[in-house]
Length: 514
Ligand code: GAP
Image (cartoon, rainbow, N blue to C red; front, top):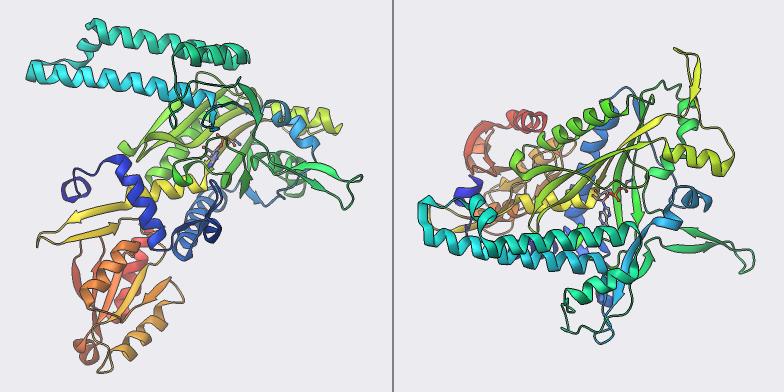
């Protein structure tokens, strides 16, 4: 259904623009403090967006906490003792390489400039392949062509050299050579076209503020850049008070803040965002088993929403963060291409050991089975709530040409996540139909988010509900007054069935269960 009936020509980048304007038009997402022209990479969720976001959170919490006896949830504070961030490595190492253009005064992430440059080279390869495919017709073997065509091979070799050099610059913090790489590759400012660059500097992504009432007594503290540390510092509190036995997990949903240098692509990269994280504490030596387990569990969670498998892929990290011994991303096919949606990391005992060292407090687990004490290893699952929101919205957004030649915009959101589950619509605004519709609404609204709409022709009202992703519309007509039946219209198929009023609740419930 998705492919066949949608506008085939809808370009992906174009789609992102459409999703952004749809999100604004219908009250999903607004730029923050818009009346003051907004604030870079900060967004507000409107009346529909906050419902969608709440439903994503609930679905995650249910599957992680409610469905797992050995996982509990917490809600730790955003502000934490500043030593937390020294111990976690964020004060010293949570940096991005930054470069300014002296002419345009624009600021860039040096690695993003280089990556965009590589993308351009990849674009040249794609052009060569396209040209050759046209020339050779059906017998064309794209893979063989890329391996043998001297021009394409040249491009591929060039990419390899650039990537290796950038990797070295990042790993060894060789910022001088990083700048030289940008100069050698003749990379220009994407906005102004100038090649007049400053040196590359490291830029710490944490926001800081001061706690305390007087300037002398004030302490520099940070807005947390990840929720995970709130879990680590509470690990022993939860283990002891909850009498938790290894392996067990602690989950948390909450705000995180990063002063991203380049924040773009709508809510994909924000400066204030929300994470849904779970740290799973395990016996040392078993972490790889659990890492594989959680990779599988998390991809299953995504698939359980009914979105095709082809929209997801794993990306295993070759270069690990300082704390990890294995890491993978679940990438989603966003309008900008496949990008990270969720990370699964085997974090070893790095964080707990660091906190032991910096706090002087033991964070060990006494294993009653072996009578030994040790610092557990940790497997983390970490998903950005806003990214999940964007994934769902951009997947769901469809423009369709209908059989009668008309068009509709529909949000094919998973039923569980849809802001409203049902709209109740009197066919006419007279003859007692609104009263009957309100009576039905009264019976449904205790269990489901419902909308009542009596304005405009019924066709327009259906379109409005399609556009906000409401899976069911119940229409009350004259027959309803005679035999207590209504029509129930399903969003995706647009099929309408006549059913007893009492059956409506069960139909919605069944779809929600599925
Ligand atoms: N505790 C591990 C951690 O924070 P991360 O890969 O930096 O790992 C985890 O972040 C997830 O948080 C990402 O997969 C992404 O979904 C989300 N995320 C990270 N930075 C973000 C940003 N600036 N805006 C929106 N979401 C972000």
